[in-house]
Image (tube, rainbow, N blue to C red; front, side, top):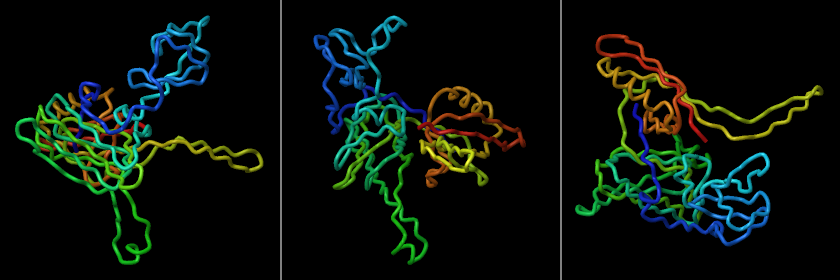
Length: 300
């Protein structure tokens, strides 16, 4: 089992993107706005809750009981949604999404969540050595075991993936491309960082979801279902070296309030999550090998 601790991707790290940032006009200090108008400021979309006079800057207004908020923060712009730590806020673009990221730190792993397209290509390009890594992953996941399924079962697609074989470079750029052909490319979240080993995820690990839908039944037996989002969860059984227990405990303590990528087994998509651990415990089972259990809940 491994974790990827993300680096922050901001203006200094995002070298280029083919996704235009033209969702709404940029906020202008000299312009007054009417209720419902939206503007962009610092890659964030704001909506006017009331008629807003000129000079009232989104995100900096003083809110009191006598002076309620005039601006509502809606979320990141389309270009920046893929870096906002939310899996359901999608960056979309016709055909392809292609970004170049300069991490500015030693990284060796990339994870992507809620991806829509035909394939994902990740390249690492160093200023001196040129292209030092390139890998293309198809998102088509047929998952068939017989001829009947081959011809009649619907074709599945992968939505989450990790690439763990990048060389450890501190100065190289990453070029990440999602190709959807003639369709709409979409990405929920991209994580770039350095992976750390915890142990070996064992059979017995369980996965599931937390469903936030609401179901209610009245006195006459009529049921109403309000469908809402859901998040993934996993309960990992992990075998760890007893000599590494202190290091692992310290690592997990440091990650207690940090969303990271959790990888039970990279070939099993259901064991790849981006979120927080709810709790963990380590049992000193023997002088060489100990047992660890970690419960992880993904964010949405």
